Amino acid sequence: MKRLLIAAGGGGDAITAAMVHAALHGAHTPALVLTYAWERLVVDPVPGPRGTADFTGLDRPAPHLALVTPRTAPRAPAGSLLPRLAGGLRPALGMLDPYEGVVGLTRQIQAAARWCGADRVDLVDVGGDIVARGDEPTLRSPLGDALALAACAASGLPTDVYVAGPGLDNEVPRAVLEPRLGDPAFALASEDTEGVLPVFDWHPSEAGAMLVAAARGVRGVCGTRDAPAPVVLDDASHQVHRLTGDEALRLSPLARALAGCSALEAAEEVSYTVCGFSEIERERRRAAALPAPPGPRPAADAGDVLERYLAFERALRAEGLGYVTTRRITEELDLTASEADTLHRSLAGGSPTRRAAPLWRLAAEL
Image (cartoon, rainbow, N blue to C red; front, side, top):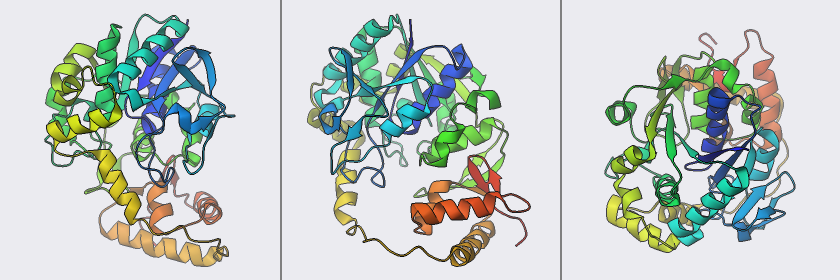
């Protein structure tokens, strides 16, 4: 028998699900994590989630169940880190395809449970927007979480909902979430992160990276990309809250309104009604505004890249930040993969090292 977990929103939730599984059941206990292929435009230039038709090389061990392996590949022009993630996580990785709405997702969850021999589901969310009301001014991406919650409710399988690191995704603030979540059930420990730590050498999830850092003892103010405010990592940042599926459903008007929805387009309309926006439409607008990808360019001199980083570091320090994510460094300095790798080696090998895995520590004196 395998444990069945669902990464509520895709992306960093799959990594978080692996950590929650390690904390609850042990990292080597067999498990399957179902996740969306719904990744940032920097990874996948096509707006919205991908479905199974967007991939080659999926394993199909049962009807309505698609497993992602390192041999899986997205069909151009789509992009995805799921195949690489499948090779980097201990749990097996399966795909949630939302194009038939809650109805289709329910079939997929039930098929996965039969294949695993599981009689219950653990639904995992990093940040906490799975219990958003829909009217929070900083809410950006509730739809995937709400679809997964509605499908778990429709599956008939007992469901526990685990919210790890409330507020770390910089959507709904922790102070708003905590009254809804109640007391924490447990806190992730450093040993729970060992199996996922190498993933952050290449995966851009910022909420997941900050959760790992907090579990490993990092404390301070961290700057992330494209967020209204920095995140404070403290003794509560690696806590995990547990709710029943029914409790989470009562807290989510969007999930309740999605019941019976049989198409992603219909789910978008429900999101407009409940929340006033569709995150897929936001992605369409952002994708349309992106400039054409630049052609190949010569690698910048390593010394020049380091000087640019030092100026960037001084500016962030002046803002009161103590840490920064890999994604923010890479995107704000517009680094190629080769340039980023060279810079990271320089920073990690310095004295004192700036590495506070998987974050980067900003030097106090330059």
